[in-house]
Amino acid sequence: DQQVKQNSPSLSVQEGRISILNCDYTNSMFDYFLWYKKYPAEGPTFLISISSIKDKNEDGRFTVFLNKSAKHLSLHIVPSQPGDSAVYFCAASGAGTNAGKSTFGDGTTLTVKP
Amino acid sequence: GAVVSQHPSRVICKSGTSVKIECRSLDFQATTMFWYRQFPKQSLMLMATSNEGSKATYEQGVEKDKFLINHASLTLSTLTVTSAHPEDSSFYICSARLTQGTYSPLHFGNGTRLTVT
Image 1: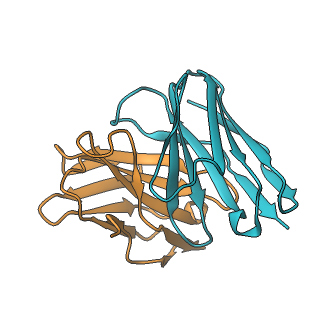
Image 2: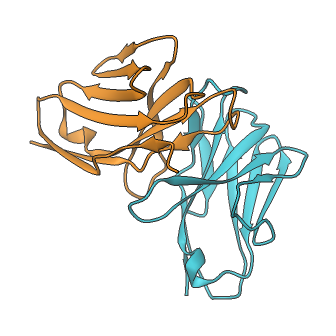
C-alpha cells in the first residue's frame, strides 16, 4: 500500500508558465510534508515544506498548498524556469507514525521548455 | 547549510565481494542517519535508520546481514553491502537531519551508484 502517491510521472511546461505538481497521501497520521528536487546522479535537495497546521507556505517562486480534508498537496512553481527541470519528490512524515522517517512518492519529472 | 558527503559516488564490483559506502555529516552532528535505495524510475525506499552508538533499525524486507550499517561516530555512518549480487545494483543514498525530530527536512548525500557484475 503506497501511502504517498504522485500520479503524474511527468509534466512538461513552457518557460514562464506555472508548473503544478500534485501529491496525494493516505495516512492521516502524516502531519509534515515536504518537496524535494532531484537532478540525475545526485541526492535530493530540500525545496519547501508545510506542516498540517497550515494550508499554504510560500518561498519565492515556490508555493506548497495543503488540503487536509482531501489528503492532497500541490507544489506551484511560478514562473517556471528551464533550471527547474528535475524530478520532484513529495514526502510525508509524522510524529505519531514511523517517527522521524519520511515516506516518499514516486516522483514527477518536470521539464521546462525554453 | 547542512552538508552530507557520500563516498564513493560510483563503484563497480564483482559478484560475491563486499562494498562499503560512507556517509558523513560535514558541518553538523547527526545522531541518526537514514539509508535509502532508489531503483530506476522509482521512489526512494528507506532501507534502515542508522543510530549512533547503537544498532541500526531495518525496514521490513531488508536483510540486515546483507546490508551492514555502522554508525560509529556522530558524523559518520557506513553501509556495507556484503556478498554483493547483480540484483544489489542500485543507487544508494544516505541522509540526515540538521536538527533532531520529525519536523525538519532531510539533507541528502549525492548517492552511490553501485554496479555488481
